[in-house]
Length: 183
Image (spheres, rainbow, N blue to C red):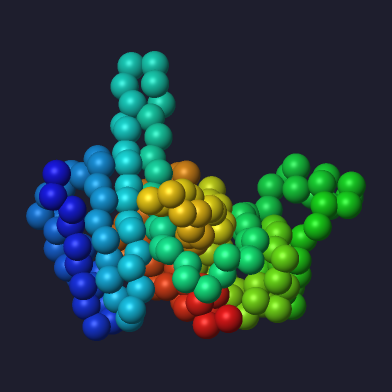
């Protein structure tokens, strides 16, 4: 399968190309494209298995981008769950960024608290992350051509949001990526 690449000056232009492709190929159960915008290359992929019979199915949406300046950084963020509350009582670390409503909803683990505050201080980013139920935003290390490289990844293990919701998630992901790369 030929790799799909969409490029534009800004998020809107790049996303419109992706949206047009998704709409012209609907229904899409498996999809991957490279989105290039503002000097960033973000891989977008989704995998939907509707299930059948006794299977309930699943869906996964992923945004992933290589990091060029953050090899030292460790970062993980997810929506707080019941077990996280118990973990906090037992001493689990959770970075608070100074926005009470957001801090109550998420668990942030990092070795650079100042950068986490910078990356998640935008009300837009906080709002978008607040709309996603089951996700993990994390810096992962992958071996690529025998080199270990760092990637920022947002994995959503839930229904695939509508395209306008996905665009907002892409915009928020790009904002977080920019904040990390500017460090």
